[in-house]
Image 1 (cartoon, rainbow, N blue to C red):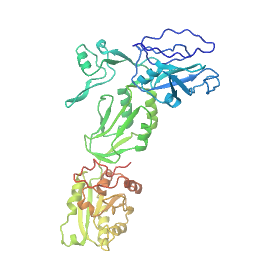
Image 2 (image 1 turned 60 degrees about the vertical axis):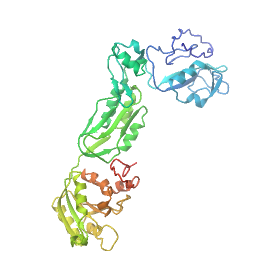
Image 3 (image 1 turned 90 degrees about the vertical axis):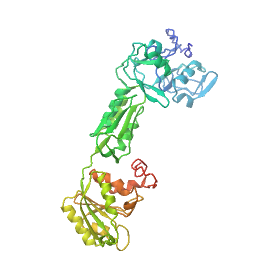
Amino acid sequence: MAIRPPRPPVLSSERTAYPSPPRRLGVFVPSVPHRRGAVDNPERGCYNVKCKIEYRVSDPHGLQGFPTAGRTTAPPRRLRAGGETLPLSVLEKETNRSRARELSRAAELSDAGGVFFRLSPYFVEEGAPMREVRTVDAVGHVLCHDMTQIIPGVVKDARFRKGHVVTQEDIPVLLSMGKERLYIWEKTPGMLHEDEAAERLRALCQGPGMRATAPKEGKIELIAEADGLLRVDAQRLEAVNAVEELMIATRHTNTPVRAGDKLAGMRVIPLVIDAAVLERAAAAAAGAPLLELLPYRLKTAGLIVTGSEVSKGLIEDSFTPVIERKLAAYGVTVTHRCTPGDDADAIARAVCEYRAAGDDMIVCTGGMSVDPDDRTPGAIRASGAQIVSYGAPVLPGAMFLLAYLDGTPVMGLPGCVMYARSTIFDLMLPRIAAGVRVTRRDLVKLGHGGLCLGCADCRYPICPFGKEA
């Protein structure tokens, strides 16, 4: 059905002749005041994106109750549309193309005012990057985006890829997918297809040890090529995502990952986008890639099992098997082990000996509470190690101690590590194994998300425990 554009009042002395509008309404892009309304040729471009309605007043008297001085970009306070008086808040809000067409069809400007408006897609440029055609007329044309076919319980995947040349045999399939009309690609300078834009976002994110998937339905994902610690610059990531019409989603920073794990996904929102938007994103991300995958570098550990009950053989050592298993998950081997009991001097000597022997990290188990026989914190301090923190806002694991002796990390583990499935040790070990120098601030930040719920079916690290905001 033909839709007639609005009829603004004739401007004071301007009666420019305009060609009759096309039979079918396209996107309003007038560049001068007009009587009938200049419209973009619908055969040049139809956009399935959000639009803004823009109003301009050119009469110096303006509308009643809205005086202006000369030309201004300020909108009128009210507009009559189809007998309904629309308030300014309605006029200024973003709307979709369908609603915008309704307004353009019904709009009647009130009083004396030389006012006109236009519907402005976010990515409107001279010319159009794509053209809409009927599916039955699309044979021989090139698709400008992937087209997804959904068969419940069977498949949800791209049935036709960007760049596919439509054949006669494709028509019934496209119609069965509900595609009565298609967008075909027309390259426009300064505009990027969603796949090209996704590649630019990928370049902002990808660091060593990652591989990128091929663009699929406008999206690219990053996959880990090796085991390691994923680190995300959350502040710069937020700055990039603040740029409209694009998105990057990642896993939490400081997450241990395995080879083949998904790390991030990225895409732009529209099918085509102004290259300037990607340039703003690149400026926001300025610097190193947003993501880095750190391999586990520390490979050996000295283990000091405290407690007189263990050294005297009164109970079986249940700590060592747990620590060895957790260390092995990150490629760390226990190369030295001793059981000095609760002798603070013996514990301190062992710490120094293992450091001198070249162990990459030193782990002391037990003796971390406030009981008189718990001497481990004092012994670690007596070894000359610099204490980062004794105590952490994490449950289980509040009595955790972290120190460094000449650059070698020394950890004092509370008894909960022996029996709880996930503790402070599970949060710290990946960072330590990756060679990250942990600070007190790093530990302090763990309070938000530092409460383990002790689920019967533990799925750590795929859970909220230890995830930073």
